[in-house]
Image 1 (cartoon, helix red, strand yellow):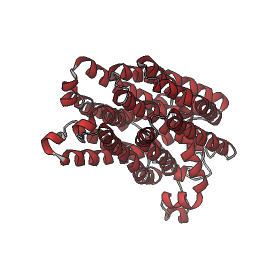
Image 2 (cartoon, helix red, strand yellow; image 1 turned 90 degrees about the vertical axis):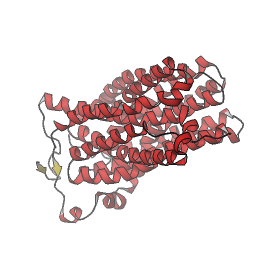
Image 3 (cartoon, one colour; image 1 turned 30 degrees about the vertical axis):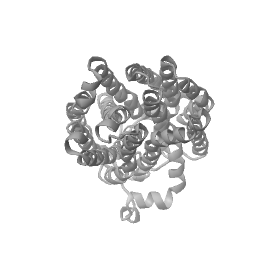
Length: 434
């Protein structure tokens, strides 16, 4: 493995084929991880309450399912620390190989857990344990893929290539959603609740093997030669002591893109099916359309970031989200099947703008020898908040008697925090080699 000093370029010059291979491996890996992670959110909204947390009160069952969903996000900072250390000290490839195995195996095992009617509370305990493993793996996946591809891309193309790990999000969600949509369309409600929901989880295993095959061909890439004092300091310690302000900015930069999606999709899907009594199949189809639309939009935002910079693209998206959040949620509360579907598509499209740009911005906040650790922690801490959004929004809606303003203001607040953070990031130097 080549070693570069801090004053040399971290990025090596790859032949076109190797460059594309890195981009493909980064994209497919994050797509598979998001497929796995999103399955849990959809299943939590549709069936986990009944299968693992049966209760006479549907709100209590939904809250229990969403609390389990949130555990995966809470575990993500731990994964960011573990795999950030591996990526910053040993190599990005090593960390990425471990995370993909962890995510694929833990997700497929969810599909085999018996429900509470068979093994009682043990099923819920197993579900929580596998969700923790998912969260740890996810905490190291995005930061490793994002750092690897951003470091090895010239500045004139960095906006587009740094977008690719985020593109894995709508692509993975698209595959997960179409799988659930097909199953809910062809199966009866009883069959879907009994065994149909398990199929997408079990499918994670062959998907994982494809990504492992792609990643085996990746070059290890360069590591960074650090000083003697830095060598004896864990990347986590250096981030905590030297880059605290940049870390707080990074959390805010990622917040809307990471957390906002779970408001306009996971929470709204649960609210529309549980409170409004709407058929979940058209809403899953709306999520499918939204994901397909976002795949195309991400390409646009990435190309735009090449021209005007990731910070400016992020500001455009966060400002638009703050303006339109309440009107979009008002459409949801109106209770129309088509209105809710439109709101889900429009909401996710708005949030995609800032999310597509966050990779370039986050990687530019930190130097190479702590980059994977720092970006992973920032992204994962935003994910902790994201995991709590469906739970908190359900709680606020319940105690405010279905208030549009209080509940919709959650999305407004997320947008404003991201705007302020992006403005702060704009005033800082970009710590990436050109």
